[in-house]
Amino acid sequence: MRRYRIAGVLACFALCCGAAAAEGGLASREIGRWKLELGVEDRLRVEQRRDFDFNDDASDNGALVLQRARLNARASLEKKYEVVVDGADSRVYSAHIRRTAQEDAFDLRQAYVRAAGIAGSPFDLRAGRQEIKYGKGRLISGSAWANRGNHFDIAILRYKKEGLYADLMYGTRVRYFDHSFNEWNRHDTLNGVYAGYQKEKTSPLFEAYFLSNQDLGSVRTLNRHTAGARMQTEVPGGVVCDLEVPYQFGKSAGVPVSAYALHFDATRAFAGPWTPSLTASYNLATGDRKAGNRMNNTFIPLFQATHETYGIMDLFRWQNMREAALEAALTPAKNWKLIPATNFFWLDSYRDSWYDSTAARLRTMAAGKARHYAGQELSLTLKYDLSSALKLDAGYAHFFAGDFLKDSGAHDDADWVYFQTNLKI
Image 1 (tube, rainbow, N blue to C red):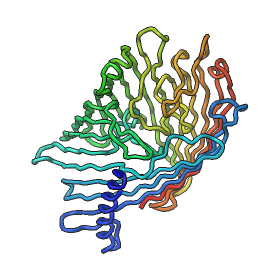
Image 2 (image 1 turned 30 degrees about the horizontal axis):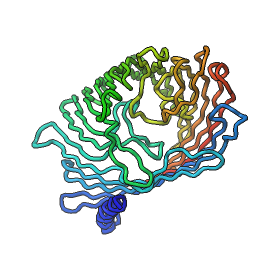
Image 3 (image 1 turned 180 degrees about the vertical axis):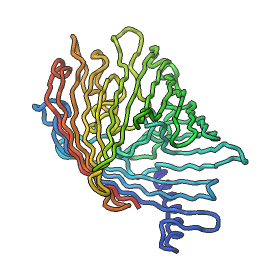
Image 4 (image 1 turned 45 degrees about the horizontal axis):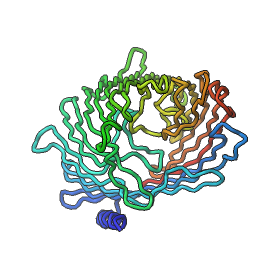
């Protein structure tokens, strides 16, 4: 019943915006000092997977169809006040393989209010259910790719003045329930501060953060803190570099935590046909060194983005891994983009598990020793904007099994192909 009440509120708000837009035949409409907007999005993706368990003898090859529809409404008053409400409905269909946990019948996705320049001060306040993203999304992000992304019931107080900004936040991650209303989860809270400075858009960017992920029921169960810094700047030669280094400490399941991660990438754009750019990157996230040593060395990427960050097959995340990657971006014609890439992966510790982008364990070494090299992903992505509203993209990737798989069990290569349409009006 609560789900239908939420749907009703969203529908009424959207209809009000829609009626206002219909008067002028526009997607948005000015009514007095208020601006009302209505948006609709529908995305459909088909994926074909082969040997994602690296075992050709297992019957686990098949297709997934993921569909996601969103309806959103926004009301704003002179850029000072904003009310946003939107809902989403997500479906998954499968053939010959198990469906992923990406279904959620129509539910509230966002419902928040924002007040800018409170009482003429440099403070803004945004509170309610919302998606948030910081930096490149390696620690906190929603997900444009997944049907079900991270969103929070959270309040964020922002200070911004002359290039300096700082967010003070407190909230809980929303827990999905497919057949009932999604609710906040007191066992998965997020609080802390994220600050940065950038004088101008072309100036160097400096960011620092302290984030706590806790269980309100028992800080002994989860009380993990992440302190880190990020810098982005252009160096001689037109190369843009991005460096991020977080460190984690606290307790997890009653065990002390000491873990760290590192990201570095360098991007160079070139003139000439297809206006190419080239990005080289390196990633490291520590894994547990030894089982039962009463110290947890596994870095956890909190609420990360779940696609394209570490290869498009989503076989890895910023956890017990090392990666070296090379990616090119090409524009062969207007509205077209071609992205070839290669990614090389190692496990930081073979005694820890191999985790995919959803934190599922793909392989754990039962006993003995293993080499660290996990394998290589080779991929090609093609994107085409048919119009401002309709975007198409497709991709293919092949994973070449490495030494760790050979030392720990089945070690067949894996393949993945997808096609996606995204309509947004």
